[in-house]
Image (tube, rainbow, N blue to C red; front, side):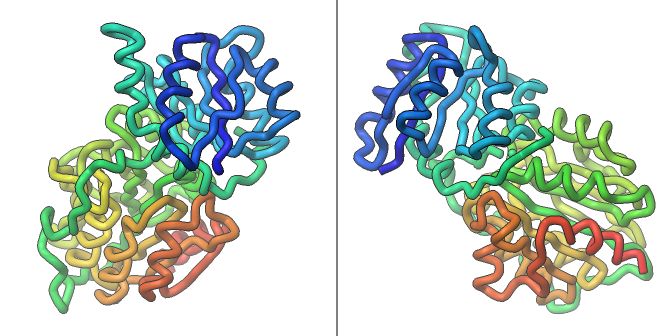
Length: 357
C-alpha cells in the first residue's frame, strides 16, 4: 500500500485529489493539510510514501517545504500548482529541489472539473514516484511522459543504423539521455565541464515549455554554453544542446560537422523527445566518434538506442544504481548489454572530458 499526503491550501483541491486516488486499491490517502506546518505535524505521526504538494500556501511555501524534506528525510514529492504553467522558473526550481514530477493546475474554466482533468493520470504518477530512490539534497528532477502515450520504436522516426556508420576525421560528440532525476544529474555533470569539452546533445524527458527554462538556468551555472536545440544548430565544442519538449532531436552529419535536426513525431518508448531516437541518430551518423551516457529515469527509453550505439562502435555508459534517483533506464540498458561501462554520476564529467584525448 502506497501512502499519500495531500498538501494544498484549497479544500477543493484536497477533496478532488483524494477522490481521484480513492478508486486505486494500492493507494491510500493518509491525510491532507492546508499548509506545510500542519502537514509536517501529521507526517511525524504517519510518514507518507508520496506527498502531493502545492507551491503557493500560507505560513510556508511549497518549495521551501520540499527543500526541507529533501535535506532531512527525502520523500517522493509531486508538485501540483498553478505556478508551474508554461515553463515557469518555479517548475524548474521544484525539479532541482528534488520533486519527482511537476503538474500544472489549469486556471481557466470550471475549477473543480478542470482540476479533475489535470490529475486524471495522478494515480500512475504516484506509483512511479513511490519507486524513486531519493537522496538528501543540501543544495538545491522530471516528469515522464503520460502513460497513455503509444509505445513505438525509433523506426517511426528514422531507419535503423547501417552496419558501417560514417565516421568523421576528428569531431567527437557526446549524447546524453535522462528522465526522472535527470535535471539534478545534468547539473552535476555539466557544471564540472570546461569550455573545451566535446559537443553535447541531450534529451531530458520534460514537457513543452520547460526545456528552454532548464537550458537557460544551466547556461547561467556552467562554463560551457547550454541552449535549447533549434533546427540546423551545429554541434560545437564547449556547448550542450537540449532537445525541446515535444520534439525529437536527431543528429545528422554534414561534411565533418554534426547538425541538430528538431522534428515532430509520435512518442517513441512513451516519450517525445525520446532518448532512443537521439541515440539511434548518433549510431547512424557518428558511430565510434560518439559517446552515449544513459542516466537516471523510469522506464526503458534509451536502452535500445544505447545498444545500437555500442554496436556502431561508440563508447557507451550507464549510470550505476547507487547514484540514480530511479534505476530504470540504465538498468534496462545494462540488462541488454548496451553499456561498455557502468559508472556513478560523479564520474560522468570525466568520461566526457576524456573524449578530447
